[in-house]
Length: 300
Ligand SMILES: Nc1ncnc2c1ncn2[C@@H]1O[C@H](COP(=O)(O)OP(=O)(O)OP(=O)(O)O)[C@@H](O)[C@H]1O
Image (tube, rainbow, N blue to C red; front, side, top):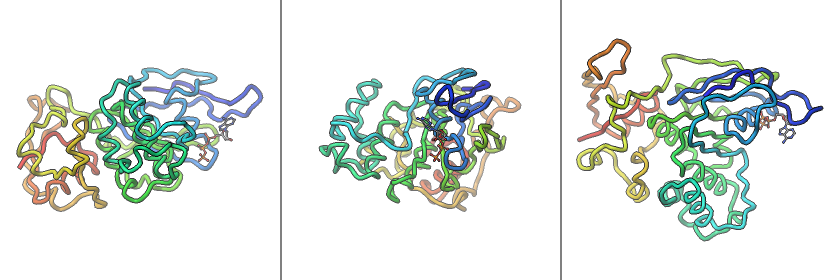
């Protein structure tokens, strides 16, 4: 997806918020948008989502399914959590919202009206509605704001899963929380311009389909033995099993006994499929994901 010479202002006489911005976001890429308050981060995200249209310029190669968590989830809607998320699932023709209700700890609030939720719980509903359609582009506007610590730990994990499935994620952050998203491309918004700090080694390009069986297609059986699934995960077939979050980018368990196996006949420049033996499977998976690798298969 590409912003091509995009400029934006909120009215004819208003100041330009963005001026001649050209940036790309690729499949499997994580982008972190930084900038001072009022720099235009939310505006940029809303242009990507499609709720704002460029005043000038074009947005090219839009993706199919977009999940958006706005900076403030609009909770003043006359629905309970269950009804709202059920309706969002129906609208996006997705399956049941239950896996996300369970995983985000929303089960106790099923029958509570949105307007009666705390800010943090409302944010979790916002996160759930964005994830239900299994988005190709996940847009998170200050996603950590108001979340409790358990939910904050979940955000990097969810980002890694979207990316592992080939989706792109764009996150705005003015609190420095994005240290939790290693390997992200940085966009800095300043004076209407966007500068890109792209580190090629940290890209999260998905493997080609023929070489990379989807993580969701991991056969049942020994694979699950490595990744303990709680009740939430047991009912979450649409997503990889939840992996406990680890803060260290590279757990020692992730390193031993590496046996490289070329994928697709070792074509020059093709990705590599590497088997890693680890004593602590979940920690190794989390560490590898945090380091920007895609997890293809986990087995005992
Ligand atoms: N709906 C709107 N109508 C008019 N001006 C707006 C509107 N939304 C934002 N602005 C203005 O556009 C500019 C950019 O705002 P934006 O919310 O995109 O910045 P931001 O970087 O996300 O800020 P913050 O970190 O405070 O959320 C600001 O000057 C803001 O006042």
